[in-house]
Length: 237
Image 1 (cartoon, rainbow, N blue to C red):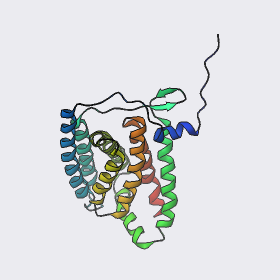
Image 2: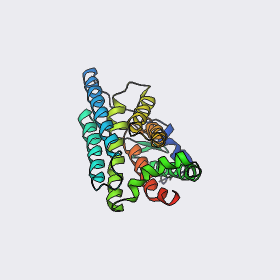
Image 3: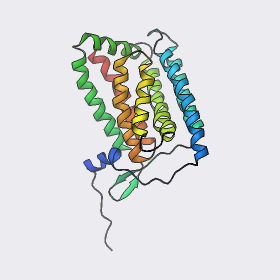
């Protein structure tokens, strides 16, 4: 009896999470698709307003974590209300597996790029001021509470933007539309640098959503990136 061949993990497995689409077997009727679009549009408006309000609070406000969790609740509840969500799969050799290590690696790589960029940004006063404006929330209050809040917020944003909203856009425009929507929602906070970060993160996670057909990969990449930013960037700025 010939033993099964072992699949060696390589760069192709990492690239598969953003570039090699898996077969999809989940489609919706026209009626259900219209319902999803209406719900997603309403949730996008409500979440954008809530996000803008939360990041315009005083940085030392004890209510900020609660406000951030409220925004996360809007995204999460809205995503499940819009319709069915899927975890997704990724190619691993000749098999399909749940994407776990690949999106975590992508999130770490993206975080490394941003950390390198931070050393440049800190030397440009207008950009450094915008970065410190956001990081002010990360240096006030309990770091453990902020860690949990960041984790839940990242998951909730992916459930909506790469889950409910992505499924509400017709092919082949999902990557572009959801990335622009994510930028617009973040830009409502009044911080262009944060919107730029949202654009980069949104584009990568949207590619993952397209390739895997689900929200697991985008969520893992998002939380890996955001938790790294939370704990590392304050030492740069």
